[in-house]
Image (tube, rainbow, N blue to C red; front, side, top):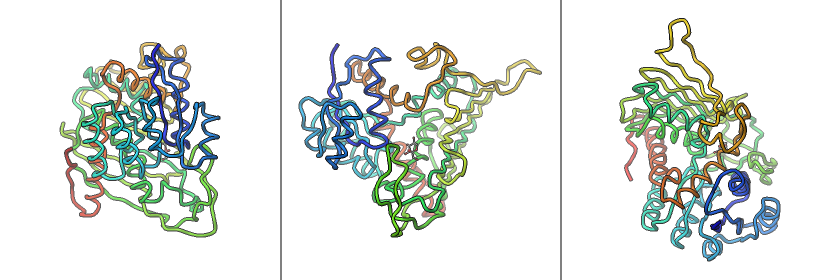
Length: 387
Ligand code: SOE
């Protein structure tokens, strides 16, 4: 069994999720090469040293430039806030490494374009981790669509609703600072439903959007919270929120389908409600991440009297990824989507096949987000740029 040396940059929420995937993947999938968890990287030595111990890494680095230069590392995983994606990815590609970068690809379209050009030049495998593509129910929806089961798609309707910053006393963490995150709900969670729309329905030709920030000042965070990275201690000093709390936009797809997208992190009761519905000429598909092992489908050809949405339990051995886990009816969770992504990446590195959302696809998402921001400024429709 061959091995591939992995270096992970970032050790908070995404660092923990990616580390779990590297630990699990070879126990549940026939991966070749197997990942060797060589080093994890973070600027705070005490923090990253402890993360190496608790997350299962052989060693650690405190400078990503040292990590990407290591001859025992062939794959660099970028799981940091968006303001560092470009620098780490360019350094890794320049060192001839394969790369997986957390979403969104970058904080600006210009950065995304520079990263795409570097990936094309490097010729190594470079993917962006839109992990919700790796939910079995989403993969199964893709199969139904590709098989023509719902006919011609006319409508894409997606909402991504959360409530973790609904409390005005929640502090000003990095996801609420433009210079760190690039944008708020737009780049953080609208990016996910944009990627799913592009993946399941196809290219978007124009958008028109609106953005709001309801809580404009928050307590400055005294320290980042525990593992999830979505909690922190609040200080007494106040600071400006410089990103959107919510973004809503309309889209026209190249296929002729119409799309609606709504993303907010101020929807009380919606913890991580990433949901879409697709209406086609022959049926409909509906997905809700909070019930991620289920897919609701409706087919117009069902016998009269028996028509209605039915709920498919997407855990049968014939469903995507399901045979690698448990018997039918035994659900999997959020963290499994990362294991699926790392499996697909390692398979793509070995075979040269589909390793995951490419930097071209990551750029396409960024171009839609950029067009939405331009639309908000002009109060008019905007066209996503091409690479
Ligand atoms: C916070 O909104 C967050 O952690 C996002 O950053 C992730 O991409 C999403 O999967 C869960 O929520």
